[in-house]
Length: 433
Image (tube, rainbow, N blue to C red; front, side):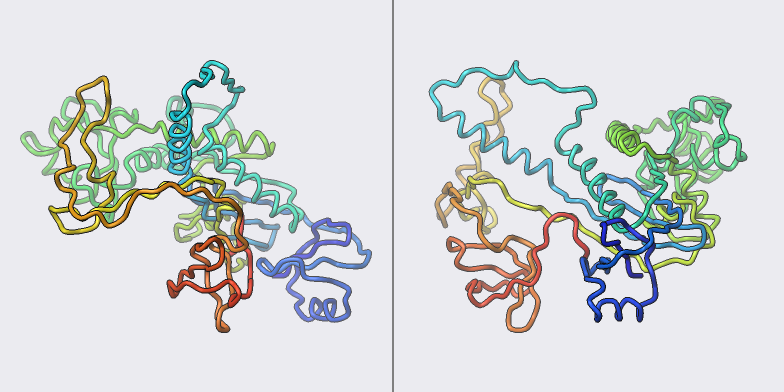
């Protein structure tokens, strides 16, 4: 599929007329603006006739599934892998900041002047919302999208509380209500049997209070069990399920992500659906569980002609940390392996509470390297994950050292002079794999 943009930067309908595209490029009536997905821009005036296009978004904490369809065919689909480790980097930044401020004799207190607006999200979550919006904007630049549908949650908590809630979506038969409650329980229990811990067997929903006559379908009375544990024998008095009181998982994190999805829906002003509805459609269409197949069902795809999925990943744009701390290295006398000074610490955790553990200084053997702090003074030309050409092969950059004079490559783990490398592609933000 070739995606087309007009000379006025308006998205047009994509095409599979590859010969026509080659002729336009050869006659310089069009130019390539992106290679994946392959996108061209027309250099002459043309009509802007388009068809209605529905975009389905399977929003998530780690992955985004997307699929855009017309009445008859699918135009694009794929998955985006979002950046990981945001919370750890924020903790590292906080550590360095506290160290710097602790070296000052006095600093004016500023802990009471922080303000948070309504709808505030933690930075580790806000960037996920921003990434969703940024990627959807990129899709709207190459496709004339007229309708967006977002999956806001795996289950409809309102329907669980009130099964008789009115509305067209809630009046499509008993099976939808069953999938809603069932999916809620499986999601809460991580799709694993809460008795044996297996996740490779079909799951069933078990009533915890069956032994005392409590067969209500409230979520607190339901739990996931595999078919080998959920047997009539285990229900008998004296067996493992009789009187069993498991600890149920909290869904605070899932609820928080649901609020992000609702915020996404409100910002886009689009329609929404639920995961249980998506799952029931996917089962009817006999599609495997993937994020782009879920997005296809969200976009109300049915017997459409499908396209090959495109995979994207989000890569960190820049390392803004100017200060780095490298801990001292010792030989651990217990194992004779290399360990950091932080691993073999004194055991002291707090000054005002007796929470100290064993002093591990006695296990510090030979000192292999000193601890040090380094300050980065400039931004180097090559950054991690950039692609470079070396000896007629393409490699990914692992990092830069020796004050930017040499580069480490991922595939061969060699240190190369930057003069021996040719830049191939700078990979920042959301890029195709």
